[in-house]
Length: 195
Image (cartoon, rainbow, N blue to C red; front, side, top):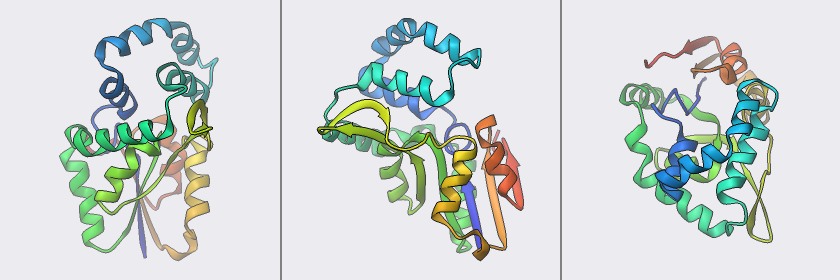
């Protein structure tokens, strides 16, 4: 059996889906004003003082904390089904579809948020392992429900979901430092293959 694992942002997509989702949900002007406000946070992240997961929580909390869960999910569905195709790399999608055509098990393993990737994955019959948001009293509380699906957490999720002993071949496709452990897991690893 063969398993094919794809990172999403920068691998399957040509743009960052987090940035694109915020612009979709809040508008371009509000997005850039928010980035200006969050400049200290972004600087601490770039200097590797603030970890990836915490910087992302702060960013999402700034734009969405307190939003009702159903509204967030509605926005995620709309974004997934109306906008995501616009940022997908055609050659990356073709590679994914070729794995499916051959009967391989295919999964997207992403640090992006489940709410806006899941409807797109469901439409394409792809398993999704992604970061999930925490909701309290049916409102987004500004935190993650799960570990950020980045770095070693990608491997943890894969091992929790799959019995890797069943697969004699593992393909992995990634494009960033957050994919190093994912790529190391594979028998066939592809770094930035669609650029």
